[in-house]
Image 1 (cartoon, rainbow, N blue to C red):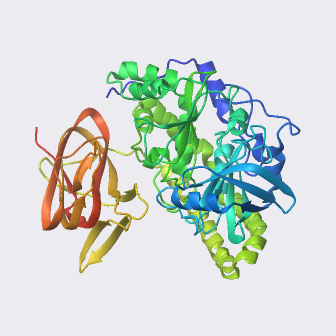
Image 2: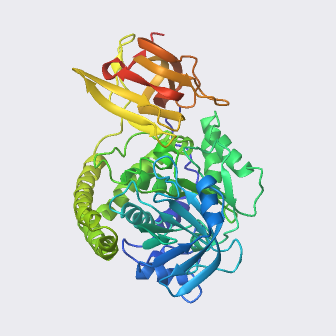
Length: 554
């Protein structure tokens, strides 16, 4: 990779305008409807009279929503939870919405069956195109099973919008399914035309759902838009990211991606510790192609697990395709570092804690009416969140001052041990554990009851050009291969991101050394090391001290 700055062909004046646009978002706690403005990627702020959703979210009322379903609809949601079923909604025992459509939502961690506490998606307009819920065509009721505070999504949304990134607005609701009180939910604005019009001059562009752990090279579901259905916009973006000639790559990418806005999006994902978002986990995002500019814009989603690790790195090189391409441009990487500093004031822990107190008081009454024990425990969870917010602010300030990460240093043919692996799962019930067996530390992956396990331990590393061997001592117990088309590997094994593997461990086996060799072609490459299990049953185990990487002699 060339060290010369690229992608800098825009004039200084144009960059200044772009910088001003980046700061056009609201301050934390400002009216959630006020994150729009004029310019590329920004829409005109609607009048309050024309958009009742502004008043609804500004008020922060917690409505009581009784969702009424007949027996056939209940059975459909039990047997085909992803298909739309008819329902009626009563709001606060006053207003009735007929002809509403409902389905279950959620991925590996948040999906729950209908008879538990399901996460729900509501469409108001499938039967009556003009029907709205406080101006919304579509909204979600998130069960918050992975966030005991019910506040992560709310904070993430406000912080993204404070940074000038369009994000769904958030409030809460008390929900019943027929006569069953299912408790407090996070009510989240859907990715509909109401949202897009708040952010873009033209809301008719293609909107893609990132799906579950899918990058832009996947066949992403088109959620809406009047553009072509051939995924040509996605393919063009992917091709630009993978352009082998770096002199051509940066102009191609800049023509198809609003780079400055993506840098802000990426910085916010890292600063929020949004490990389950696009840049780190290739998950929980929407991608909009604006017909006015012809460029792609990433929108955040699925922010129920923020701030889990106050010391989460903001300097790692992300594995997602678009993020990797942007961070490989030296000038854009420098812009990212500058943007971190510009966004730091948003993470003032004092202001964030006051906002947390304000909203937690609002939801306390509902929690108390649902479950007094949970309401009591909620106070402790909120206190823990405020501690993590304080720790995060301190960590961000410390990391901002650190130098750029350097490639790992090797003595040829001498292994380097690898530590600090992160979990990733593409299924609901895979078990990933870090444990000790005697004096040895081990990593495990095991199938759950669903009999579908696609899960891994992952670690990103910066490597200089050269040949490498990745190895580990792995044992297996009752591993049965998972039947997949075009799978990158079978059973347990090792590989790197974007590759396939021949190595595999199936059945039952004692500890064996598994190896995967690869080459880094660029001057410096960001490589994702993967230890995975793709199986219908069984488990694998690895000794932590056996996970090693060796640079092979030329």
